[in-house]
Image 1 (tube, rainbow, N blue to C red):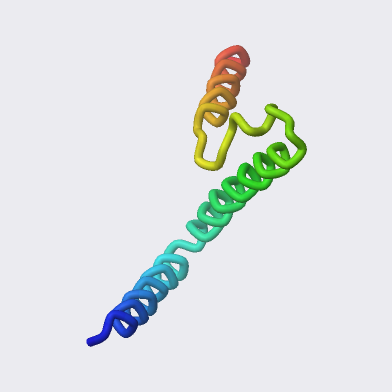
Image 2: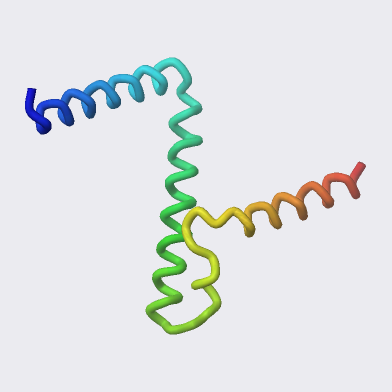
Length: 83
């Protein structure tokens, strides 16, 4: 079997598994779409900031979880203050 055929078989198998997961658990599609959308937003934001030459958005790149952790900590503190 050639390498190209092996890649195609692997791709078809992976797509079938993903389709099965989405069919069994439809909310997974929303979670995955949200994750991909967030990463795309962060990448676009940092790309735009880099093109403008500002250092504001260049610190946070795609996959940087420090900002997400800070937001989560603020939300937890806010929830604790409410109770």
